[in-house]
Image (cartoon, rainbow, N blue to C red; front, side, top):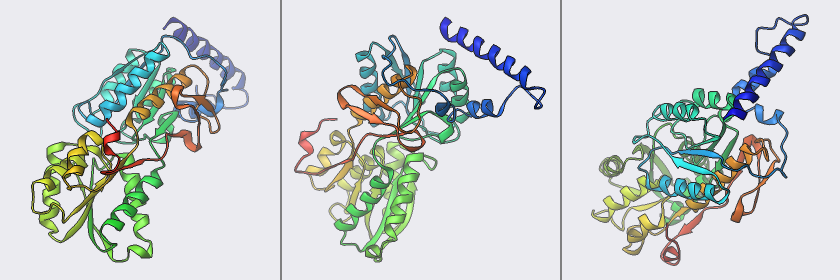
Length: 362
């Protein structure tokens, strides 16, 4: 803590001297053009110099801030990240709200700033609602990593993306299209209306549907279950009541797909309405084995949390800045390269069905 405070003091003193020198040339109002960019957060990464050979710092403190604290999927991600931190002698914790509303994460970020964490990892409920406090965190030297659901690009240094957003969105349409013979009405059961990842995937789903091979398929509704089990269950019921001839539902959220499967499993629609989307094997095993769901997709959430922890540590240790082309090692997962806009991609999702679901336990 003392080192960080002293560094901030030296930075402020240097900035004041530069400002005084520049006053003859420009109207110095306390913020230069570069400072404004740095205050925005994201652009600061490109101005710093990475040292990929720098050792990981010891005793790093980091916190995972999920969309909501009781989300089973996010719990898997965060627990894996917390365990990963121990492997490089850091400490990590999970904090967060019990609801997934747009502004629910803000107070937690403010508290983490006060605690002077070395890094904050956030799965954003809204890409912009968290930006103010995250920019304040970065101004104070705290590294910010988004994972699972991104913030606006200038509100973090790195985004850990579970897979290519385009691959996820298009593949979900491809899968359900094949399952329903490329004919009929479909609906989407999403999480919250502002969830960055959900909306990005849905945009790619809509783009995929423009392909002529889907001319006999129609997206009739995007419903929102707010990553709440009961609301997602009710939204599934509402979709089937509103569209009794519905052929398929895509739910790109682990809470939503499990709730929808539970509803279908005990209804007359079982075996008649196709359900696809993103889920965890442990949640979906029963429904795959009893025929309610033929298949679904996901990446390994443990690896997502593990990668997030190592990316945060690499940032805090100066190995990377978030600039495109930066490289870092993520322990057992190997080497990763930072892509455009600070994005690091974990890998391609896995499709689960009766043939392989018992090989996975998460």
